[in-house]
Image (cartoon, rainbow, N blue to C red; front, side, top):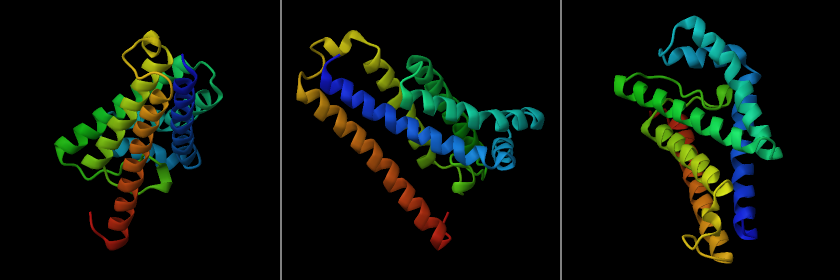
Length: 183
């Protein structure tokens, strides 16, 4: 792997790690809220929702720590992608049903409802995990399919910054809607 791509992978890995640590920590400090958030989706029996609500924060923390520390990274990327796929499926079902369900993405730190924006954000995270897995553990990095040299870094940095901008803009919009009482 070339140095610019390795640096871009490290930056994206750190960003995903910090996001998962924040999500896991926010749920770990409020286990009741985490259990309630899982149960609110009404996808699994209440007993299973309680267990999932207790386990989920620690899974997110584990993935985040693994990504930041570059420890068993391939497993963390696979589990993280699977988790984002699970979240996207759950949000899709809630949206199709027309339920008013809190997202629960950041536990007690967030009071957003599941929306098409939250689903898009989750899909973006899934794509980020898949891209990172592909780049981090693929020989494609050394092929001619990617620009060589600094072009790779610039290309990946632009994708990462666009992704972060999308997340920030949607969070600001959601916060303004909550302040103004708009759903």
